Length: 255
Image (tube, rainbow, N blue to C red; front, side):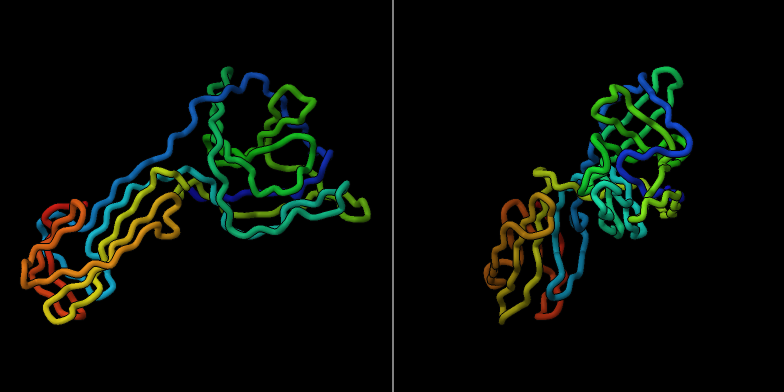
């Protein structure tokens, strides 16, 4: 989903020209669950080719979390009391927080946590939410207010001289997913590392967590004089052809 997000720079203690409603009957529904995907490459018992440095076999267990992606960069707000701008941001991902349902109307809001705000703009918090029509709303609550305040994401901004104006900003956004930093994430790779005489060399790698860096690596070498079927952990591969630049193989048993 791609829509237009109208952002208005905001300031501590100010309010919009139209009063946002107090909504006492919004209730939390179940949190959205992360999606877990299991990927195996290549297909079993299929003749496959790979070049030097390519991954021959891989297995991935990856958890994806829902996020709100804002694509353009922008300077986020001016805080009059602190006399500072909230820092500029480029493309950002806001993590999913929860879903709200209105008991009176049945409407729902998918809310994403406003984690890019470093300095609090007021004594409370606010999140960005999408409604069923794909528009951005805000959800906030002040420390002294027992209700959720809900409305269009618009308010006032002040410059250093106290001049007040509404400053619109447009940015495209989409609701999507990204790889979560889940401890359940796991990836295995078996990489071709060339041939020396009648021996084949490989690299085995493991990744865990956010999958950004490998957590374990091991170099392995096999002698084709003994067998053209090689194995590592649960993996079993039949070698059909191999040079120092390319290999042809068939996976018998995956990781």
